[in-house]
Length: 215
Image 1 (cartoon, one colour):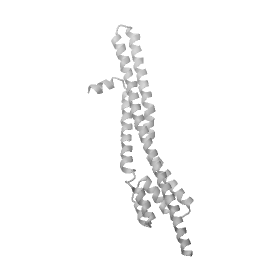
Image 2 (spheres, rainbow, N blue to C red; image 1 turned 90 degrees about the horizontal axis):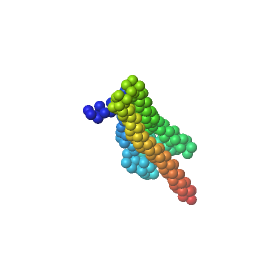
Image 3 (cartoon, helix red, strand yellow; image 1 turned 135 degrees about the vertical axis):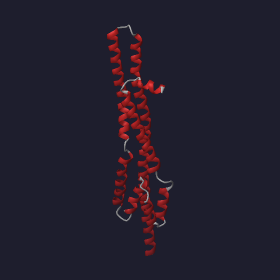
């Protein structure tokens, strides 16, 4: 309770600062859960799918991809579905699927980014309003109430300090989430590249087999 009372001494601007922090924190936790439980690729999934394709178990590999509503899985599934089409069509299908995931991976990050910018500004506004109150006391009572003046200045600075703390916490979380989004994008690109490489290998193998059969 003492901590809460101390924080609320920063003035009414503390309310929007704390509300914005709670909103950002809930969205950060939502993204962390989504990244680790909803979007994360199952262990060794890409290798198992590519091995299955290499061994001629295409239907099984395609089914495994379709059963997983995850970025890497669906990118591979899009490529496998166009495995017999031209290379350009196959790459375009995987590219479109990967690009469709980027907005979903970046969902709510703009809100956290906004809090990073807005929290210090709200804190500064709270400090300015507090300073105005202190100067009003000074103009009314002069120096007869020095404790009221200095106390008002101290209270005003609480808002700025809180806004900066909120911005720093959100900034660290935002950079971490952004890094995870980039990892997902890299994983999708890597899986697509490995599938294209496997396709080239299968085509070379088929060409060698046709040549040997012709002899």
